Length: 507
Image (tube, helix red, strand yellow):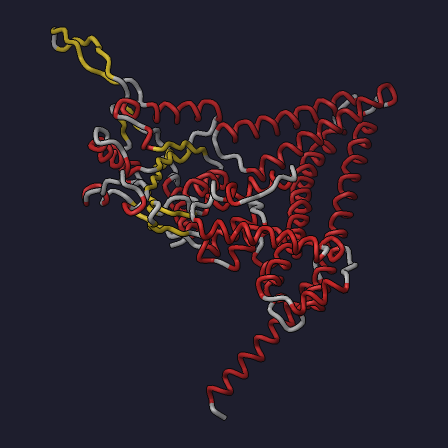
């Protein structure tokens, strides 16, 4: 299966493990909750999906790499405890709490989240001294004498032996206590993740042309050569900063993330060509509705790789704008809920200070929510930006009321300032929506004229359909160009299907 399918399986399993009956007992007893074992090549996103699952389910996450643990750190350190049994005095060996178990209790205390995932990576690479204790842990959720708290689901991960010399194969007794999910690298799945996480189009466009370069492992005369999903994502991050600082990108930089000489050379050459396309096609002019004639002429004679790269650059710009609009829409939706509460309370308030106190409390609540989610390791970047935005806007409203000073005394007057602030934000959002719709229209117009009978329109419509933000944007705000192109493509596909049916009938 691919990593997205694995994520869905794990998310469903965790949800089922945490189901309770009418007496508050877990429907599946803790001892019967088989730990999940995610087996797959390195760098395909196993850790990333754990963070996503925790954020989506609203539970905590504690992660550990088991290769860093000795028997003492995992099970606890021994100490002597004095005991009395049947009138006789004894010195007994006890163990301190495991560092791993202690971390769970710390997260619960600091975040107030009592359920979560304990994710143990590289579980099949534990030290020889720790290996015998793993069977007991996987079956009973016990490290030493200390149990994993109820409500914590164990998910483990590891690499197949061909990727790691330290791997020890689990015996049948151990494997029989695990739910095993074997995961393979899959570019199409990663591409959706890449779009949602702003992986740069230089990377995604290159991989569209060379999908076999997405994940690559081989032995060479210099040793093992490897390219992973993690490497591409990390390369994308550093490319963004290099662009920001106008620093030159060369093979030495790329080779720090992509450990294959051939792919490094090809990507570096493509990167230079990609930036040349940016200059030659004048992308901003295209999206502003003023495409140069030279761009049309060049598009018509361009090869598939060049067309794909240019389309990728244009779509990335539109999708980035759409993402900003949808984030602003989501934040305004949350802000509106708070302001509706404020409006209901205003009738009961006696002074403008009451309005200020409400806004300050809401701002503080959003900060606390963000801090607790961060401590639970389940704060997504999207939620972080939304909560920060909410808190900042509420503080801005407070400042605007305070700035009016003695002019504002009644709570209704204070609420009017708040409403004016909110209406201004909505107006700004609507302007962004219209601007994005205009630029999307210009993109469709260019693709229709520049590429004519090519598959570029199909690629554009497909990308806008599968991308979460763009599909939401179109559903909420509409796009005549998208609707028309979709209907045309569906009609064309139906005509092709009819022709194929006629040929098969041999009429």
